Image 1 (cartoon, rainbow, N blue to C red):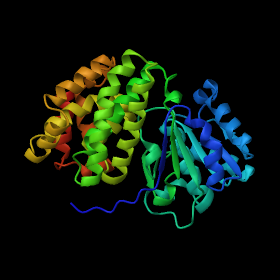
Image 2 (tube, helix red, strand yellow):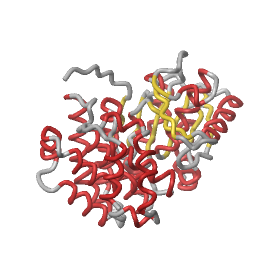
Image 3 (tube, rainbow, N blue to C red):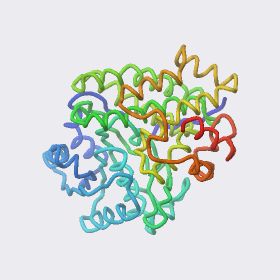
Image 4 (cartoon, rainbow, N blue to C red):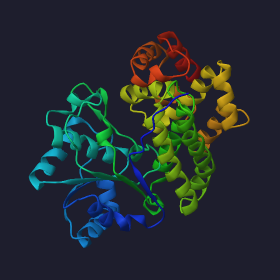
Length: 369
């Protein structure tokens, strides 16, 4: 299959690499750095540590530490106001996917004007964007290796995927030490999300020989590391496996997109407040069974894991203390048709290796019920 791969993000991996943030920001021309983070990361002290390295490198630094989970246009607007007042010429996203998405969203509006809705889609930014560094503190979204910002419309609550090659980070700092202090619940949810990214990208219609390499390596790293970090949260090698695996999976997403499990997950989050990682995890085994009716796709899954892959995923869900049935979230059978219609409208559905109708989505929800 043909592909056109343009690596955009430099990966700086290893324990203690946060200390290089000042050096890297300076290398990419930063003078006035906006550090975008969330209250939990601020409280953990990581934001202060990052800021100290930036100041030590002689860079003016301002912190926007008010990022909320699943950021909306309101969050981005607040970040933009701080960036404008400070006169930022460089942006750093430090935290989970929400912090990195908010940083990217800020970059769109700060450099190109308008509002977030103007960039819904791909390639809508016409002007150059500020250089940026992403520093994940969770091993899940892989946002550090993607050129998309996922931002919800504050009024409609519709999640908008705003992508542009110019929005990609110049560098991603992958420091496993930053993930050790995650609560067990966050480790579990983000870890399942990373595993889902590896498995979905492996089979999408946009997959390529190159994206498949990242998908396979991501799955191997995350599959081995996940149980280890659940058992011993201070296992730095396992934390490194998860962090690097999540980044590789993010690189795969950038090149091959996602599939029906994510389309099923978003309505569960929107309607029943199911955490994203759990929502993807509970649906993924059923989507894999559905996709495996295609022999070519089944062979890809078999190459990744020799055995009952859906069953293995449900074992991992139980070890992560997550439900394996969606009825656990309080929904009724009468809710399934509406969820199916919502899932069919999700943008990732179009990349699933098997076409998925509204009836198929309802069948997936019924099998997971």
